[in-house]
Image 1 (cartoon, each protein chain N blue to C red):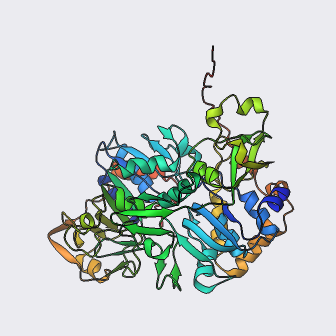
Image 2: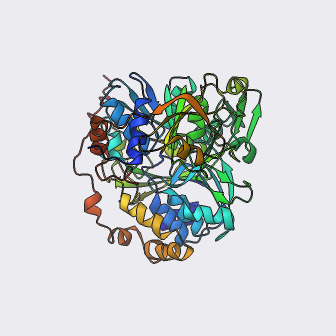
Image 3: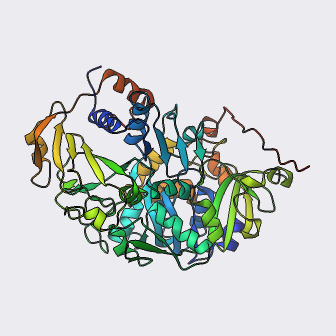
Length: 255
Length: 290
């Protein structure tokens, strides 16, 4: 089972970010699979929270096109209103959130709103959804993104979901943001992480089959490389089995 | 449905729909607004899974007040993009929110206060593009958003406007309380003895509800717990066909403009393949009193 896709690699890495006992603001797409993988391996007591108004322990047994699919409701620990899910996050009870993004910058700020002038955008992206809320209020968060120069940019032109702001020391705390901010950017090529207390992303690991040079050439700023940069552990057979159980048709993971 | 939209959703109305996020989206009502050529609507919602995109593409919309507009399983909303980027078929004004802040905006209206404070959106540029959001120190004040009308699709309702909905409700309750009036469409029209047997499950006060429409399948392609699964393929087909203006117009003609009503729409779909067949009724709550 050694063959796997870039998306499966990302899901495996994302699942390892989930700690046992975490309350995870799951979101959509690949993180839904990451949550399922984690629950079935190293995080058997994690719980998932969904902004539609759901809390779960066991992942849904069926493929999910969205968090609001009926099979995500069956067996839920709690079906409720969105503001109740947000209440838990506002109190700092969400340990980890996942946010998708179109663009991320060197300080982990995400843009999912506008490319170009918001009044006359070159590209109108769908918007925040719950992204800004997760970015500001969850204790730590992770974003998953295809590693391309046009997506990993020096500075995003519009901050939908703030990361570490301008990168200055303790920017989040000084600006009243409760949560700790982004802890990792998981891409199709590697994993970028941030120093304690915020600042600028650095390259922590490179996925098997890729090189540091490749990562640097696909990154829109001069990316710091960790002194002990290493290879990301490939997805295990157990992780791949789990991923394929929850995405049998490869809707999310076969690009 | 035609009568409800005709009477209660005028041009220029502020209309909330899709308040339960991905489930229970009142597509039948939205399509009726398109057929009746509503104009200048201000659409309010959290995320919108394709319905707002369709209304925007059909030229019904002047403003969007929402956290996210697109196609949840497929990504971008192509009509929304064309409207914002090129003014096709007309420009729309966007009041950006996050999911949390649009909920608070509706709660503020529900509680009849000008705004509610929150810590979300600190550090976000959404504060720059939405005039209804103001920062004061470490708090953001979210200005009230009051819909003229909220349209919801629910599992069952009675003719007096008592609507039972279950599964996650998103921002449905605050939208209903904030709104001037509520239009309910339902899978099942039931006797009041059914709705009143479980008053905890009634979503809105009946005093807000101005119309109840018995519209089975009125949420397709979105899911309805206990009734229908989500039609993922339908969303994919819409995403592909709406990439071009011509493709969208052909889609709109086929699925909205040339369709008389919901029954004829459903006759073109393999409804049985989407119908929930494994039922899991909850245990009834005992409301006994003596």
